[in-house]
Image 1 (cartoon, rainbow, N blue to C red):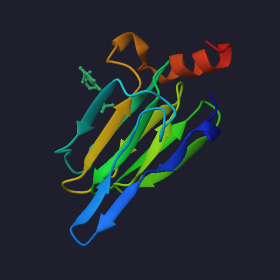
Image 2 (image 1 turned 30 degrees about the vertical axis):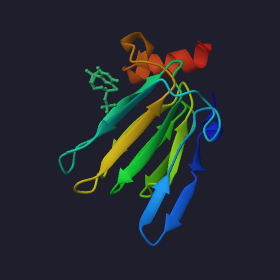
Image 3 (image 1 turned 90 degrees about the vertical axis):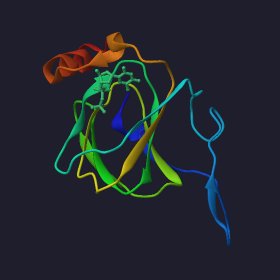
Image 4 (image 1 turned 180 degrees about the horizontal axis):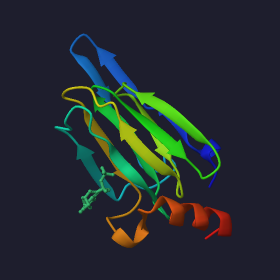
Length: 137
Ligand code: TYD
């Protein structure tokens, strides 16, 4: 799927003097049902995460706390997003290579995913990912 499918999605935000509340309903606020939630935290300064693509998985990535950068790559074009809001997330469609870096101290990256964890769904080799993009696998 092309990089143009990937976009920031603004999430509902209920604000009052006691603070903010954001909620996410699968297939309502985001274009897939949620089967799994995971989060990255205690990421050391200078560390990079990601470095892979998913064959079929849809994801929404949110900077629940702090900030980080995500560079997306569909094999033809690249785009970098800076995530720093807990009420907006980056939708990443299948077949997009991603690199996450520049994590701020104490940042938390929460990921909503359309499927349970399956290692077979990963492309972890960039050359193989490019080949799969070219052959339309
Ligand atoms: P990986 O997806 O490579 O992490 P990141 O993209 O953040 O660098 O996963 C790191 C390790 O965690 C890898 O051994 C697979 C394992 N893992 C699970 O067991 N279940 C999961 O839901 C996820 C996301 C990863």
